[in-house]
Length: 247
Image 1 (spheres, one colour):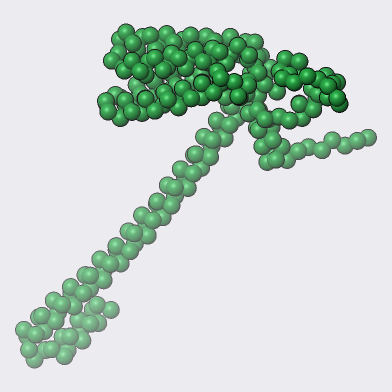
Image 2 (cartoon, one colour):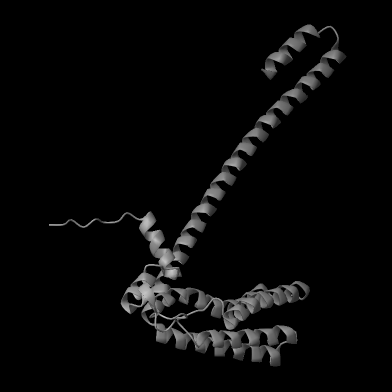
């Protein structure tokens, strides 16, 4: 098409060489502009296609990561429900290790005293919550204090690390070992609360129709609110169930 325009311009403007030269330059510029726009459109389409493929890959990777984490949590919740006494010992050891880490930070690092004191107090509240393990009273003062100190410790940590530079690996290690490890263990251990006998967690007298211990126990077993129960519900809702034939 550009060559046709140039031929027409040469035919109509042949008597005047100066006008012909200007018209030819103008048409040449227009042809280059059209070609550049075409190349630009092709590049934009290729970049948009590449961005779409990248986002699809990211979504697939995130989905696999979430599925892997859910499978790991489900397996850990089953182990905790099966070995509650051993889990209690492990959590107590982790609390003592966290207190030792706070002591090391106080001796060898320049962290604020408020962060270390609040961190140690939070571990003391974790020990108080651990006294009734695997039963958790969500309205008890130790449990409320533990949740409150989790929020306070995160606030103090974000405030400090936003003012002073530390490598990302050190910041992540502090959050993982000092702030997330023990609360995560308690969170996963919520499923162990389903196996508590009603005689251990009974807060009101057994009377009327609920005086039967066995009936009360199985009625409580039907109300499952732990992490393992959530995963079991998700598994039954998503995965197809196998129906047994009655012969």
